[in-house]
Image (cartoon, rainbow, N blue to C red):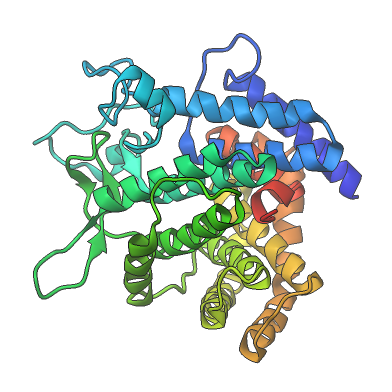
Amino acid sequence: MKAANTTEAAALMADYARRTGLDGDSPPRRYLWTDAFAVCNFLGLARVTGDDHLREAALRLVGEVHRILGRHRDDDPRRGWISGLGEAEGAAHPTRGGLRIGKGLPERAPGAPYRERQEWERDGQYFHYLTKWMHALDQVARDTGDSRYNLWARELDASAYSAFSYIPSADQPPRMYWKISIDRSRPLVPSMGQHDALDGYITTLQLRATRSALSPAPAGPDLAAEARAYRDMALAGEWASPDPLGIGGLLSDAYRVAQLLAAGAIEDQQLLEALLQAALRGLESYATSGELQGAADYRLAFRELGLAIGLSAVQRMLEGDFRLSRGAADRLAALRRYLPLGNEIEAFWREPLNRESGSWSGHRDINEVMLATRLAPEGFLVLR
């Protein structure tokens, strides 16, 4: 079964590479969230198969994302790196100005009215996409030993924290914008994402742990202050969510924390307990919602597959040798009964008839890449 999953995942990734211009003659089409998962998938498949061409695809994809999403759009009168750096310095530090989402429409102009449906299709910067790219870069650093990728991830982290965080007033705690402009000068959606600060905190812990493990430790931002700020914001929020993608994110984050604990990089067992508890509460609600009984046209595969990927993380935590507190072990044991949901989601979206639906074809790139992650989660989930 594992070999069949690897073969199918590799085929999905090969199709994705051709379709989005990473391989072949198609014009390049880059989208930050999907490409972050794709980088991890290529790395993981390279580890499993021993095919270095897949690792080379991951490195080429990193370069292409920086070359395209680190620079202004072709339909924008502005040119060059969105950081404002010159050509040579921008190429050496491609993430200092953040990275564009890669949406089809240009960002909303200053003073233009906000229209929620259209905003989803407009470019800009999303914090939760940037944390996914930080993770992808760090996975490349861990896989190759090349400290540049960890440096780029930390520079992106420092840039994102500076641009997205703000203090509403002197007597209020810091908050974060959900979406900002490409040049980081203004918010586009001022509300705060439920898990943005939490993702920032855990990703920053990971980046700092990687930096410490590299020899010699590379220069660049230390991120100690950012980690404290993310933690304070995260602890002030409510993490439990009935959204499958959000639940899956909590479970994937829990596995990252478990690995960092096992490596001695962090010591906060309470963080792991809280993540597992929040995911458990969300799953208790989602499992009884009836959403998985709907027809394919009324379901969003990538959101469900996010949950399935998180349940793969649960499986690995259950099978691994981790230093768990009694509270974390109890919560992990309670999550075991939801593992069949991951198999159910995977089987549904591997069914060719369900992939003929408009909901699948309308989000084909992200759906196929995240299905590949579920089938072969090594590159995304495992911190080497």
